[in-house]
Image (cartoon, rainbow, N blue to C red; front, side, top):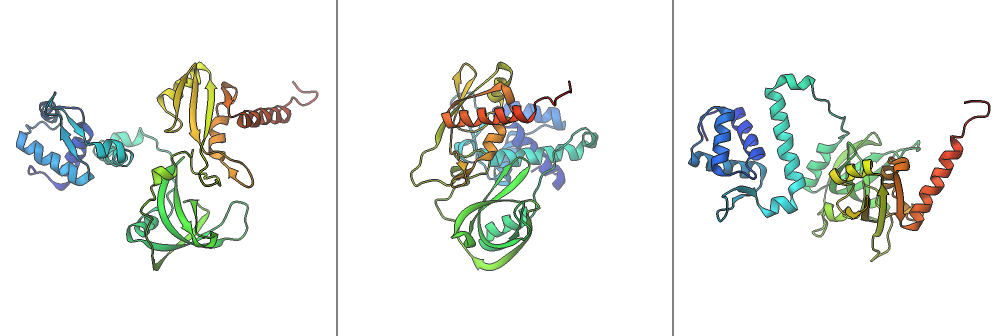
Length: 311
């Protein structure tokens, strides 16, 4: 590395990670010269590139047969893209704001619930069982649960822990890291996360974090909705779910596990998302979901009828 301070080194590594993808070595070195006002020798560039790989645990390769552009290797793009993109973007934004203090008063972040996040991460790293004190909404008494954390998911400005729970016949459940968790205690007991558990696979056909009770071998449902022209544009630019497919005529399909009764549970996260579209939405399939939204619309209409004698 060049003779720079540690802070400058990290800053430049973050910059390179953010800008190397899709560019040739010449383009990167020219851009480097414009940004840092110094020349970047080819040998120095390759040392920086190797340091980026080590820092972010990624592989950067070059397409020597075509335009000699650099790209992130397949394991980054397909298997670990969400995590690594989030990591690099977080580093980059934090670093940019640190050295551009005038931006701090011009950028507004949504609050993020992350109570006990580090405790759970450290327990997962060390394979240690946790004892949590949890109080459900509407309950007056907290309960203690012995849990083996399997994974974490971020959804709607909150972190959620997926864990095997001893007191629930070792069933895997999801807990929000919010005020419902009163305390977390690390135990001396060890555990192993099952080799076949993968957090992305676990939520593959789930919207949000609500996992319905399912029969072995049960397949997810095909959900089809139609939106008006304006709202359809949002789904094109920001899909609701990885299974989303465009079917034409402002119609979109999803493959999801859904539930709507006391026995199977309530996949309320998805219903709440669809309700936000109001009259812009038409549910086409399945028929029971279409009926559910029709009945809810009728109840809403009755609840909001004009009061007699008022305009």
